[in-house]
Image 1 (tube, one colour):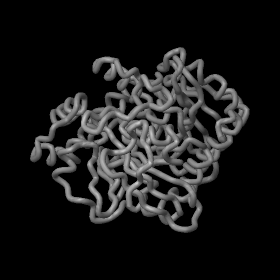
Image 2 (cartoon, rainbow, N blue to C red):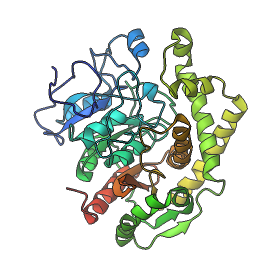
Image 3 (cartoon, rainbow, N blue to C red):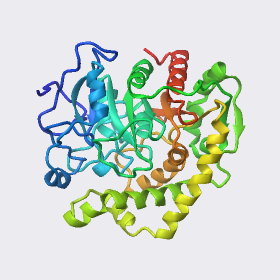
Length: 398
């Protein structure tokens, strides 16, 4: 079945739009959703954002279990959405399928790699949408497009039937325009929680210092509302090594996995890639094994330290992205600079396998910026419940 409704922001992959009706009853009945085009749906191609990938892979033989779960819960599929090629990018650019428009800031990038899913939700074309997050690919487009998003605890939800990039970092995730919908989807997909994340509220200094002044200022009201729920924030030094060190270790460890996951196909196929993606895979191919090993070695004690800090129910709060979405006119060098600033922050949850929810909490330079809430692994449902409470306090829930 095809969906012929308009797509004014170019969120969906080109061609006939796949539509599947959900079950006649269920907790998500009446909601429409979209799916990033790296999840398989039986009988249909998974393009992974690249024409050579689509050309060299047959239509999917089975549907990804996460998609099946949503359909069985009553949600109806409205189409597959664009992704950055092989999910390796944060701006949302795709030269083959077209870069989706950012509905909340049309002169700026939508964010990636889950660009189409974020754009579809922000434009009201879907109630929620599946994405995936390795280095920030749900959190950043949610922040850029002014919507809610979640990266669950690593391993909480199966990625069977989804294309991989960095398997020890890859997580499914989803977007919604309303906190209540974000939470309802979590009730279907997430395992049951540890005891609730109830505080204390921790304000890590490094992500706040890393943010531009306009972003930090835009999030002051949201932090005040959060303190009203959890009590005064305690400032902590979370990353004494520095966010640059976090970024470098994450980059190297992820690159090694990306080449191990996709290098054989790239070497055999010699695919065409767009700007930025080509360079990232070339760097992954040439990654110094010693640097990747250092990243893996750093990750273990870092994750243990952060998890211990959060074990009693503490919640971290900091800017999801240090800047609003870059303008479409910025150079590749400026994009790379933003990527480094951003991924030093997204690597906190990425390296430690933590759940992170981002809320559309303010405007900087006239464009959306998000506030992230982060908890210990296994407290995903509690984090979603807290996000819903904070959204209500900020009048974002409706």
